[in-house]
Length: 471
Ligand code: GLN
Image (tube, rainbow, N blue to C red):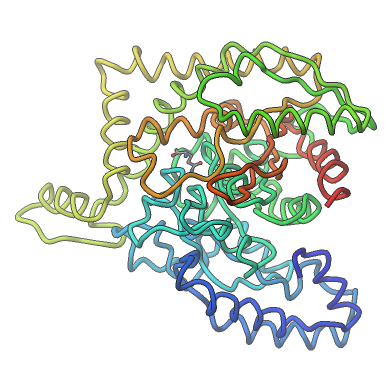
């Protein structure tokens, strides 16, 4: 069963039981995960919950919560009470969450059954899952390639057929880029649509949680389950925070062509042109737009994000959470714990962030980047007066080989199309636009639909028409 919708129908009709689906999920993990390594932890107790769901379906049929008995997986930077929340870091290797994240509370209330925690780049910093302290995840489509990141474990869990849904987090593309590499649907909501309470913070002004699924309808269902105002997160928004965004029969898509030249694989561009043809054939209009500041997105992101990382990660000091290495005095404890507990990429970002926030450089770097960010938002608002949706590839290449982007800058360039979305806080949806050839294998590549603030429903509306109805 590939989708939640299919599972739910089968449960209601009595063609399948949650305990069978959960047992099947655990069996797939047993069979495939030794090689793929999508999971950091598997929850065998999921079977108990599934049996309770069996009984509820037998008694109440369709009159049950919408996700009852649906097996899901959670990226391991999302807190679930009583389970380890490691963020794939040695510093949190033995940290057990003492409460449920708001999104977990909501998923549980809707009846979903969490079967395990998935691998990620340490603290969600990366684009390949190679930065996990517990070893990388492989792409189920081609195991010589990365699944993308940082939610690579979540993407692989869905792509290998273990679960129909996995939750990820997206600070600069970490849901969308792995979805693109693994041939899935991924959704990054409008900033504030989903509570961040109980997510291990990376960049607080950028982070949002969202689904990786096999259909847009499933992504919509999961998004609606987890979204909403939360008193535990003051940045959450309501439905009327932004002006209502309409849905239409025919949309105008804007393509920032000037942005699609450098570093984008020819094969990806070809798939993108084919997708444009699909859109026009379906009666939509595709026009060129100018978004000059989008090209500055990557530079601004790699200042704003590390700045927030450096302050968010200050709490891992050997005193409050997780790993604690003995030292001669307090400072020594801090230094030894962080030296031992944090990986190279995390350290790089903490250093960068501390530097751009230091008193002598604040105005030159952080202040400037925040200014660029503000102007990017204005630029977007202008463009959304003339187009309904902005169209780009999700990533400049298909999934790459392990070790091939060891240069951090090369890795950061994979984020070129995704980071402007987080910097400006708008929603974006990705789904497969086809496959490209890579050493004899067909590798999926994703297309990205970017909506205006609060335009989440518009993206689901068009995504269902263009993707779900054609697959
Ligand atoms: N690849 C990006 C980075 O390394 C995005 C990470 C994310 O969205 N969590 O920062």
